[in-house]
Image (cartoon, rainbow, N blue to C red; front, side):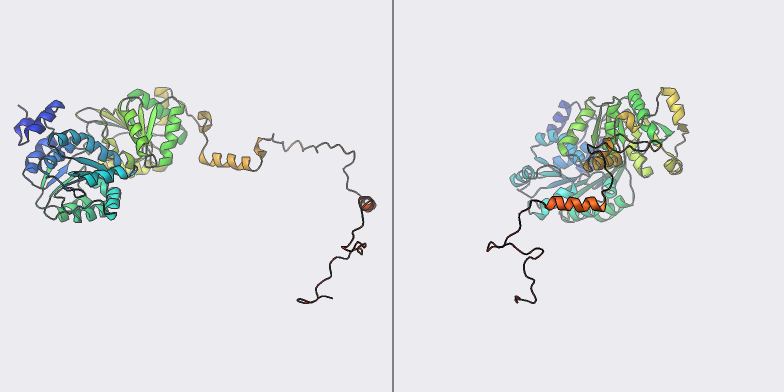
Length: 473
């Protein structure tokens, strides 16, 4: 008989709330962590997004944390991205209400005033991204000296994003006598540093089927040229349904999303350049099925959990094997199978082969011709999609600024340009006699210039020239 939450040392209010949410049986990471965490032990957990780790650290923090004074919280949960911080808040809010504790999510990209008001009124647990929390600390709006329950979620990704110095600075500001949770998909040197400096005799738990276990995933690698990417990507999305598409840059995300929409794919997109409201709307559209594809950068998608993702498409290649694992871990969850497709151009072929060897993946490289033959796809160029590259757009603006010369019909080199017709009969250069006569004609009838006294001014004489400073002739 499987273990239930009622069998654990949880408050009756939390058990009833979980039952109302139809959560009765703990996941492997929850079952492993809760007993030690409720005893006050430091915990090092290796678990991917979607494994249930939010409740694994959130339940003990909310059950054990004490009430806080205004601006002086007692619990702190650090997350790498806005989306993850907000997701943690939503997941823990029912539990917090059950035990009468207050939560607030603090992250950038939104107005600061509502967050400040919450801190001034008093919150027990702060869920925050490092950057915005540092800003509020510098402004004197919050102090961490009474924080005695700390969670660092996605610790390895914090390090990847360059947040490790801020994380260490924030941990140094908390109460030295505290309980510390570290959760990570991988246990690398960055996580080891945090464990060594900020945990005391931690108990380690690793769940089976973690994010780096890709055994339930079918891997495909397609060698192709750039023009073939969009039509093949569209066919993959049509075939598999819910697909996360990863690009390297924000500009690439914008461009790929526009191109997918141009060929009839309903797509949403997220990256750091979009507002929080736009990112939330895009994620909601993908979650509820209004968008079949979510195009994202690695940073923006980190920590996001979406159920039933059928396929992950590496539109741009990952930076390394670690990023490949993080991206691919979005699919094949909860015992389900998943598809991972990688587009590989000639420039990245050798690197992708080395990456396969490093991860122990055995998969042949398909060619774009084989894929097109299988699916009936044909290459589509930017011109056929009605899109312009950045350089073409700049050239168009430049031509318009210069007077629209590009819109004039081109003249063939084989047919010399005919001179434009003029009303004058003869446009040959005038002779010297004609120029002299023209000058005489132009001067005829002019009134003679006169001085102020009324006398005619001598020809070719103007004001007297100065012969020295302040002297007159």
